[in-house]
Amino acid sequence: MNLNEIELLQDLAKGNSRAFTYVVDIYQERLLYFSLHYLNDQEMAKDIVQDVFSIIWEDREKFYKVNNLSSWLFTLTKNQCLKKIEQIKVRQKHISKLQYRYLNLTQDSLSQLDTSPFIFNEINSIIIQTLEKLPPQSRCIFEMSRLENKKNREIADELNISIKTVEAGITKALKLLRPALKRYLAIVFF
Image (cartoon, rainbow, N blue to C red; front, side, top):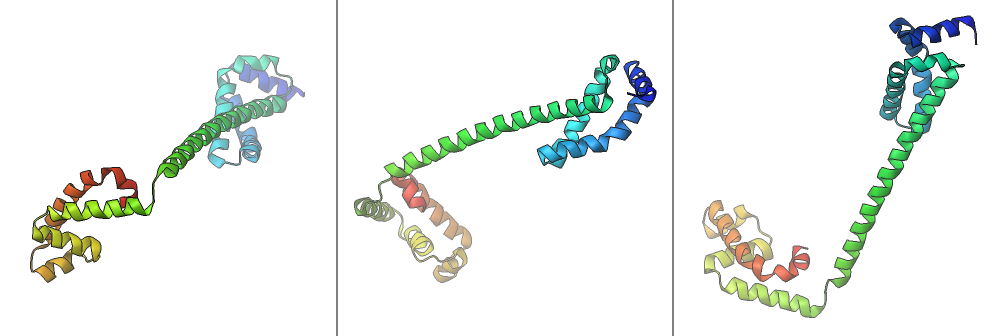
């Protein structure tokens, strides 16, 4: 370690802001590339370097004990990178557990879903019975919309009614069908 580095470290330890700025100017880019190499994320690497310089300023009294400035700065940066990687690992592990749980729930739900012809016949029967409870115009509107796949404008033009009346008829039918088909919503939805 040369005399200039010893003086620089002593100035840093005393809280000399010019010495600190000098260190930032010299090492910021180097530490950024070092962090970027291991984290592979520009923003994280910038955050790490900023954290390192914050630590340096907050713990500047420790500069009296430093023998090699470069070594100390890269060691600080390495340790901050290791902390960040550990945080990422924990987050990924948590996300993986949540994804695993979600897949298990989906698998359980799907395996319990009955797609037999009996169920489809039952659904069809419920739809027919429920639609019979509707006024004739609402039933006609719903059948044209859902069974014939006609747009609201087409239905309104064909029946010579307003679009609002078409929307009201569909809404009325859906209000009756939802509770009647509650057990079969997963199948009916698709």
